[in-house]
Length: 491
Image 1 (cartoon, helix red, strand yellow):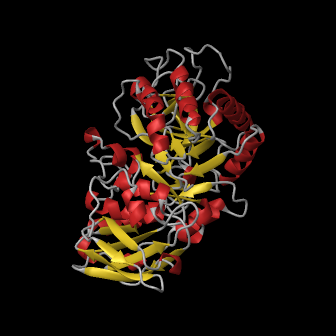
Image 2 (tube, rainbow, N blue to C red; image 1 turned 30 degrees about the vertical axis):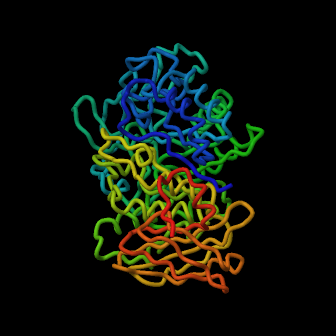
């Protein structure tokens, strides 16, 4: 079966505490659509309480169980509902990935005065003064609402490397705490050293901190039963830390622990270096997303022959999770780079109907979320069904013309194959091979403007695109079996 992941949330979901319940109810539908994994949002309490998306981490040990930051539940529901959601998805044969944010903490319970050096926000290795200064920041976390249940560790300034707020002067900046150093095995293409991201930057080189994060990670895996992890903000975090931490997490469970990380950089070399020889995790293909985004910005300048240039899926397809958009690329987000709606059918065809990579479908693209400003991609259910039932076998690429490209899948015991043409040429067509085993068959255009083609004795056909951006052809019998297309054009 072709693997397919769902990012099971978007940034602007309503903060009504019902998301875990809704996802549990959707479990049978998601399985029927062919999803093999669902990535759920962060389950623990953020500084914004019931309104926090989950990336403003307050208390990792509070999964919606304690009255903290103004609520018991999180934005998505309670601990019991989260565990029930995980179990409901797993009961349908779907793996669940938990979202892990270990880089920073926000919303501390008590102020501390700390000696620190202010650094240039655009060059964190450059001190703005030779003298230290005293900053007052919310760096002591006692979690009074939890009162020591599950764990009694107190986070204080010694657990962090820096902050971005001085409460005394009511001023933002970037301060490196006295006696601390930024991690060196992080991204250096931005801000010279991009260890610091936001809030209180966790000191991952402190052994006490490491032991605490290992203890929490083991508890989280045991408590929730998730099958894998999605790791946030990797370019800001020590690679050595995660190589060690992932190994400890895998040693604590009796099943395969799939791990995928977010390293938000266009440079595929940096992504390959983070994967490294250990190959302990997969990464999202950020360069491919930006290729989609850039293509969607100028319809007349698209060059399909370069759509996979400098992408992780071309360099390391086994450890690549492909995606079109996600919560960070949505409108009004700091990383906003939303692929324009008109191009999304092509982008999803390029991820779902090819053999390389593990594609991730965005919740908003599947269901449409008006409050996010994102309409549903109408063609997406059909493309997913074709992936699940048809897109198998040897792949033949015809990525040879800027304005029209295509590829075919010959089919296998798992599915009959498919042929895909992407075009922004009026009346374009592509001569492609689908395999001699299909000689004499009639293939139907199930997405696009054309009707059918007949496969010649050599297993080839000329597949017209008409004026459609995406055209997909299937063997006639497979086309007849589709459930996500209301009318099949017949000769």
